[in-house]
Amino acid sequence: MEAMISSLVDRFERGTLSRRDLVQGLAMLTAAGGAASTAQAQESGIKGTKIDHISIQVTDLPRSIAFYQKIFGFTILSEDKPNEIVRLGAGKVLVSLHHKSPTGIVDHFAIGVEKFNKDAVTRELKERGANPEDNLDAGFHIKDPEGISVQIVGA
Image (cartoon, rainbow, N blue to C red; front, top):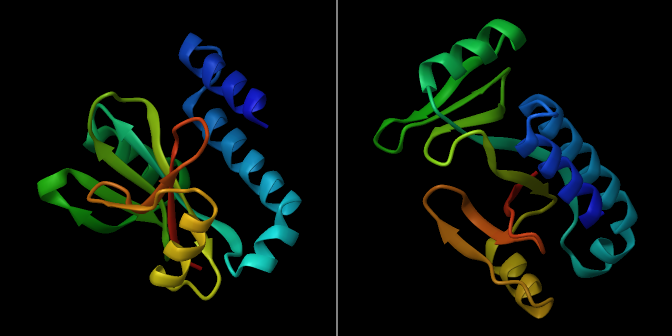
């Protein structure tokens, strides 16, 4: 799977893959990878059940907001004005736009975990060698083997 992610990112950086295609590809790989590791997750008590949202760093926040509103019919669900973050969706947050450099990258994606308990999840992750951290931009998260921020939230 690492090779597939690397290929997607490489194609995006070369301009042969759109941001939308990159996000879709990463979401599909995540879903496929999650299905393959369901047995391990069930044993541990950490069971990811869905992609919660994708966070994208953007150059022009108003332009990006307008795009997601026009193309997908999303509405603004919440804003963090001091940090220039706008969360959009249709009833729940699906895309989080962050005016931050470098732009045009997926800042993080979030996986919803059943029966989320931060202390229990923290213990489980540390036992598996992960280093869960709190971060203003991404909340409670870990880094995957490629260094991508994976936010962990309640499903």
